[in-house]
Length: 185
Image 1 (spheres, rainbow, N blue to C red):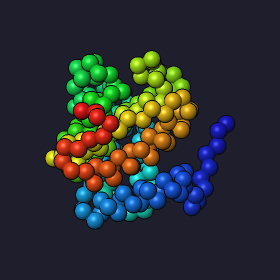
Image 2: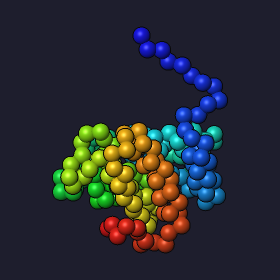
Image 3: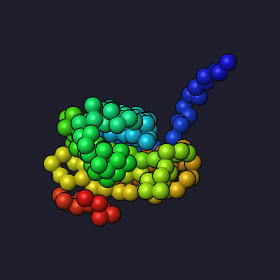
Image 4: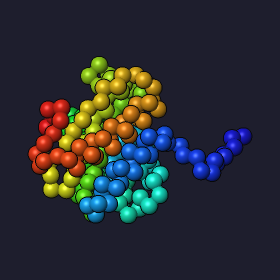
């Protein structure tokens, strides 16, 4: 029989990650903007980290966990043809997820992630540890990042993706319209 236990006052996240989430939420608070997440390989961990911060509800509006292609299409409006043509793990899909999250919410900032956490599911073209991220401010062009983490273990791929997502949100807040990174469309 499995037993659940809870540790009062102990977070499941590293203090440095919580501090980074606090910094992002403070920036959003200062502009009175809200954020939503569109997550595939992280399964809601970005939203989980953001909501680990007390008072996050004034800027965190919602999170879409779109693990399956059907969820990406049904909840975010990612065209099935786009997924068919580029794959679920692609810059194009990450961008469509971020745009779809903004379309289906009142939020000002959306961050989207899609990748191969492993241990299986990789291919020569899309190996384990490949993650595409996009962050978009409403009315602006998304910014992108690609992680190529390798087969460092499922939990570490997911955790490093969460950290990269927060950094990309800061980059989106700092960016001029039309900027991107990694030369990704």
